[in-house]
Length: 71
Image 1 (cartoon, rainbow, N blue to C red):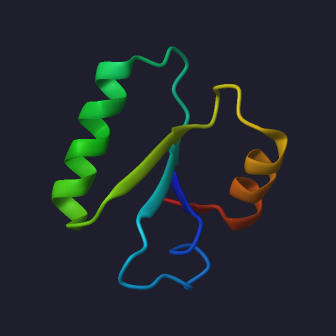
Image 2 (tube, rainbow, N blue to C red):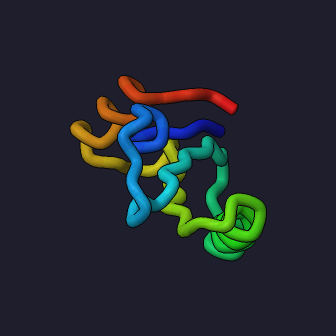
């Protein structure tokens, strides 16, 4: 699990969501939604959650790896 995007680069503003990636072997929609909702409650912010193991555009994968802050 980790951060990427504006929060990872410390370029966020008041409209920024928190971009989080996770690595699930067998992604399940309901598990992803539960994780997203729990993170939104904990962080009091909108969460953009992606599973790194899913088919992501090469550009997005590259940006995630470039920005990644593992938590």
